[in-house]
Image 1 (tube, helix red, strand yellow):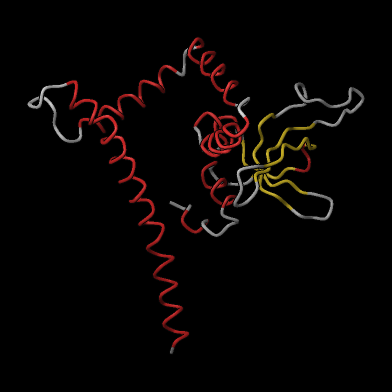
Image 2 (cartoon, one colour):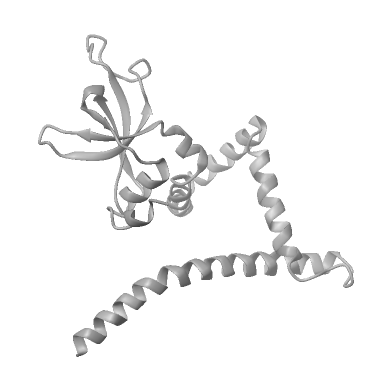
Length: 199
């Protein structure tokens, strides 16, 4: 009886926890932005012009504008200088680097670099899911006498941010019928979350 109750409690927890965490993160973001920007707006604007939620709306506009500005070369160059400064600070570089790598992993520009989902076959018949990032040998650092056509494949690791870029012959690749999002989720969760990727 105790085992049955424990199993149902665990099933309920696994079911509800991802939903609750997602909703909490959305709530935290809304409240945090409203608190930070709303308090500033209340000081700047007259009381009759401020309405609850204006801080969150301003935050969304600011995020959109920053996204637009990051398309400009000058803004990218300035941001790169700031990043270089952060990467030279002993403690901050570790924290900032880890957070940035995590979010860059899911960025649209990063996924745009992935050209195809493939299964990479190794000598022991083991296959790993990877993403082709360069589809020819022209820009790869390989020996001049190597006439084998190679591609660069990124092999991500499950439950981790890192991965390995592998230069491998094309004949060792097998195309996989998955979207980039489905494959990324499949690899990151070690296949556990793959049942929800069919939609």
